[in-house]
Amino acid sequence: MSTFSDDEIKFYEQLKNFARQRGAALFGVAPLNKLSPAHCTLAPSTLHGLERAISIAFHLSDRILEDIIDGPTKLYFFHYQRANIFLDQLALQITDFIQRQGGEALPIPASQITDWVNQKAHVSHKHVAVLAGLGWIGRNNLLITPQFGARQRLVTVITNMPLKIDEPLPWGCGECRACLASCPAKAIKEKPQDFDHLGCFQMIKELVKKAGISQNICGLCVKACPGKQAPIFLK
Image 1 (cartoon, rainbow, N blue to C red):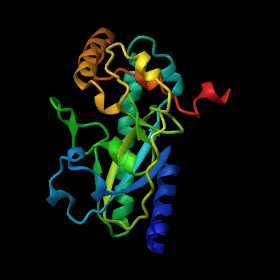
Image 2: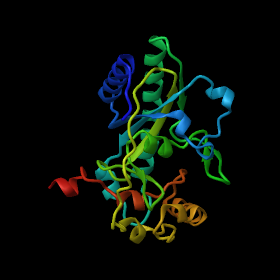
Image 3: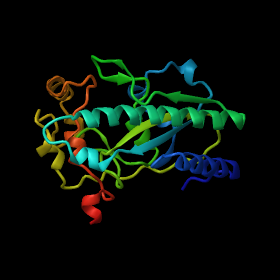
């Protein structure tokens, strides 16, 4: 069992309350040294002295996702973009909060691919979120949380602020295979590590063209995994 200093606990609670009051649905902190180099493309010099990674989730609109039938809608496209903008703005506010306390903060863009061929970003938000105790990687290769399933967007802020860290959750998909049935590309397999990235991306390009939108999104397996707080479970 990890023990934390009074400052680590105090700053954690202050920052969590700050984020939740500004629209964060989920908040967690991970030790940066546990993040695999495969999930971070930033130079060591960029990360020097930064030991914590803050993971923030925004809960996407269940109603917009339920409206998806056979591919992304223009409503989902706009919502997806605005959610990313919101998360980037929230990351800036958290950065300002940390810097006002005398700390350093490195906000990572919510949605910025740096290598399209290998589908890499500066930092894998979902893998930070797993380490921060928000959820696990599901069969659909997305972060799955108990509260919202796959229905969230993520952002990360890396910092040297003393913060207590959260414990990862156990893998929780169990016998559910709803995402497998939802995927027109059959890219989702029994094991998350067998996910067909190329097949998924090729299908997304077809669906995006059909929908007349300019963002590489689909939404079908996101819709299929609503989590326990979705309206369909709360009725």
